[in-house]
Amino acid sequence: MLSLIFEGMLLGLTLATFFGFGPAFFSLVQTSIHRGFTSAVFLAIGIFLNDMVMVILCLMGAIQIVTAPSNYMWFGVSSGVILIIFGLVTFSRKVVSQVPETDDDDLPIHVKGPKWFVFIAKGFFMNIVNPFVWIFWVGVIVGISTRFEGNEDELVYFFGGTLLTVLSTDIGKAYAAYNIKRYLTDHMIGIFNKIAGIGLMAFGLFLIGRVILGMY
Image 1 (spheres, rainbow, N blue to C red):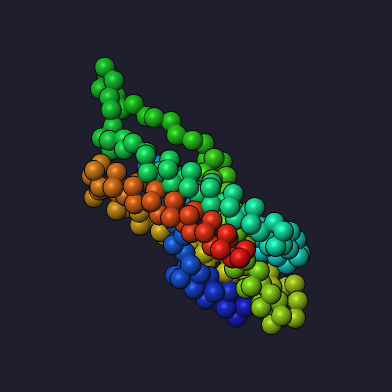
Image 2 (tube, rainbow, N blue to C red):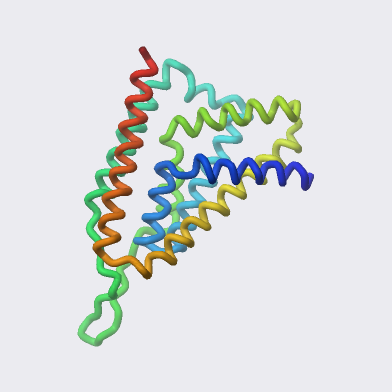
């Protein structure tokens, strides 16, 4: 059992290192900077839940609905458009000064942000709109399932180690971004917003182009 979990953790580290810098990464870092570490953790949990659902669906074979050629182009284009919208919103986000405002009694005014479940939903949705994530999990799960000859217990231990490792690395990225925040000026955060927005829009355009070109 421990060896299976360890092997799954190695896969999780590989995913986090080589495939962990997509749209979800930009959103995770930006959330940590703007909304705080706790909000970013909830976002990471949403990403984790999405990965878990995708693994389960892949194992059940239901993933074929999304990856079917008849649905792939529609799903890919709509996902790209959503990422572009996220990018535009991020690019145009105004930076709120990190110095808290005060009222007449010199008491800090706390601006309420979205509820915790909003960040979980955002993380889940941010990951689910990327069809390349689905296709990646299909490839990984087919290979691993063949190796373990479909043994359910072994697959649970293996992918449990994988998903928990990915979650841990996402939380680590959020923590690093949160600690870096204290050294950032409002101007620097504004620049990061624009970089993150451009990154999200670039992912969206790449996704649309990849899907359309793949049809010809």
